[in-house]
Length: 326
Image (tube, rainbow, N blue to C red):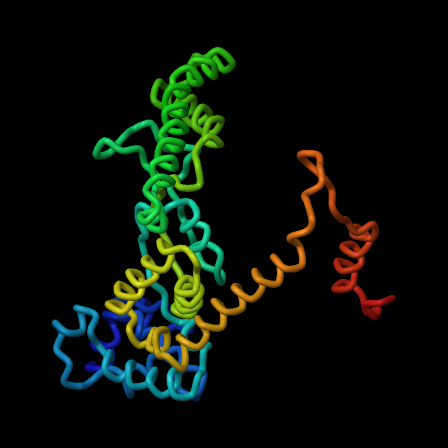
């Protein structure tokens, strides 16, 4: 019938109790689940009653535009006006950030739980020079300090030149340690040797080394990421934050309405920036008279002598009827 025809493009199962959503915008999938938590209806009934317009054409249905207007109205009320942050966990986006320095990559990957994939210096050799330049980032902060910028680039050039010069000999050395077995294919053996050489030498690559980062995260995670990035002292991080916001607003605009609102995301960003600056000022004042003491390369700073006992107790607690402290 008409209802089953409306459901079919968007639900993997029309009758059973378990099904997945397909061919719907992220904002609609998130809004459906947001309503799900506050309704006695099934998800498919909610979709039919509140998101699927009877007049919607098959072309609109297949293009993934069903229910967008309704979803954005719902988010405006629940997310922005009521401040129900949990609904921002219900939409996700795959995002790519290319040519990021290692510092930027670490900022990107330091947030709420998300899925990250970074170009690996363990498997990708960095001995090429795209456009005649080694693959590293020059901070914009050095633009006004040309002498320091030249020293910076000369130092990084030497680091990359050393890496590139050693990559071939390192592969020869690894081949001597791990001769090819009779059953190894040429391709697999060649890739294995290269990976071992790259893994050994990647410690030579500086923090300015450029990388590509892939992120899959919820809208809530992206919002928190953007608030932190907009407060970061590095210009590269702040500039990429603006680029990320532009791109995410093309796919999940309803989730990101607060980021640059002065008394919402702006106030939170100001708090992060001011707190970091105040902490640095206090640190300089309290610690400037102290000199670093000599330490071994590796040092155990702390441990819990009862750690194993606590782990065993926690494991047994779930399998017993005894109080936790007993």
